[in-house]
Image (cartoon, rainbow, N blue to C red; front, side, top):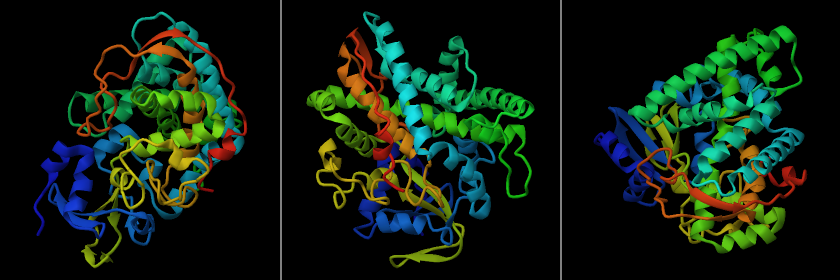
Amino acid sequence: MPFDDSVGLAVQGYSWLPGLLRRAGGAGVARTRLLGQPVIGLRGPEAVRFFYDESHVRRAGAVPEPVQGTLFGHGAVHTLDGGDHRNRKLVFLSALKDPYRVAQLAEQAGRAWDAAAPGWVDRPGVVLFDETAQILTRAVCDWSGVPLADPDAPRTAADLTAMVDGFATAGPRHWRARRARGRLERWGAGLVERARADGTTDSVLGLVAHHTDTDGRLLTPELAAVELLNVLRPTVAVAWFAAFTGHALHRWPEQRDRLRAGGLGYAVAFAHEVRRFYPFAPFAAGRAVRDLSWRGVGIPANALVLLDIYGQNHDETLWAGPYRFDPGRFVDRTPARDELIPQGGGDPYNGHRCPGEDITIALLAALAPRLARLDYRVPEQDLSISLRRMPARPRSGVVLDVTGSSRSSVPVEIVRHAEPYR
């Protein structure tokens, strides 16, 4: 029987599951235990398809309470399976997979950046992570029909990022995340009740407020608030990728010239490479529906099944020079659906893959060139990225001394490049 490796996960972070699979040999499957539970780790495109087959792996009962209480919310779409999951996900597909809506959000984020950037000039110590979180908060609230007074944007952005920042720790970050979720769920429930009273239906807020579950009933205001936050929170979480973008442009300064001159195609390729190269989600988790076998390894019913996301995105059998930052690998090449999985794998329409992936790509493709065109220097700071910290980020948040700003438009055709998995 494998020994319990809970301490190993806590100590090693993102490198834990890749290391476990490496020590198990080349089959892409490994066994261990976490908190006394049997665990099977998987990796590779075939494993992605196995993992996202609902006849093999379910989500109900797989998301631990600390993650529900911070990142996703209790009763969220992430915890559902089958018809209940597909029905609930309809509201997200309507909001996040509509090409026109995706283009609108990218344009609004670009305008918010252009409005904010002149205020950074000669301001000491602009933290890219924090400023981008506020930009994205303003943009996604405006886009989704959520009223947000300008003075409230910094606190709202801080709460939305806190929910992401605290899901994988038992310390102060976790309790900040819980308090932030409580505040935002109360705020969101009030928004839902007002949208219902006003008959608002022509916005993302209206879609969520008037969505009915498989029993034909409206979601409770509290549960509708959970799902509204599951639109706002992941959008603002793109601030992590924005900070990684700043890190990449500092470490590989030649990329600034490529982004300035490379056009939309290169911006999309750069977005893909940021999502592949930098650590975001370590793995996805589910529970075995029944006794299963994967490549000769038995998986007992109800065992925890972990899909290695970070390891797959750095697998040398899939990526030439996996630890080399190279957006060129995605120029004129659309990544296969189950190959590049920074936000999960499978089918976003019928499975658990994040429906906001197109928005993440569009936002990065809109903001990365703007950052490249900004005149700034990077003062001395701690830009280290610890793989023990989940979610990882540059320690300093990427501090910039901005000396000048510039504007650039965001073509509506960006959406054609931002939907690689239809």
